[in-house]
Length: 164
Image (cartoon, rainbow, N blue to C red; front, top):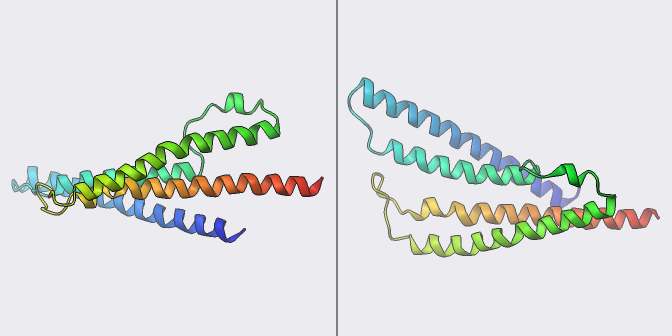
């Protein structure tokens, strides 16, 4: 396993831990919100907002995990019928098709994060940029995975040529 693969694996592991923490925090916050609202009759003003933001972060980081593991929905009924070289070409086309929306999300996510830095959240009163920064961050992580996968495709192609 090369340096790039080790980096990709470590990044994915860190994102898994962060996502697990976020889903745990979200669950605890929602539980506390119910207890405080209906049992103690003293609702927490900030818990719903924090749980929502945790969900957004968890969902977008989780999407990067799915992309890394190639677990997103696909039409592999047709893909399985392709011969080896056509599969590699299809993989490259798919990676290219995914790259463009991710690059747009990364670019405009940065712009949106900067634009929203002065706006504060309703309950917690912190910058909305802390929520929006997950857009370019997750897009950048997914772009990293796509680039690594594309390099893997070319590396396998070179290895196949050396064997011949």
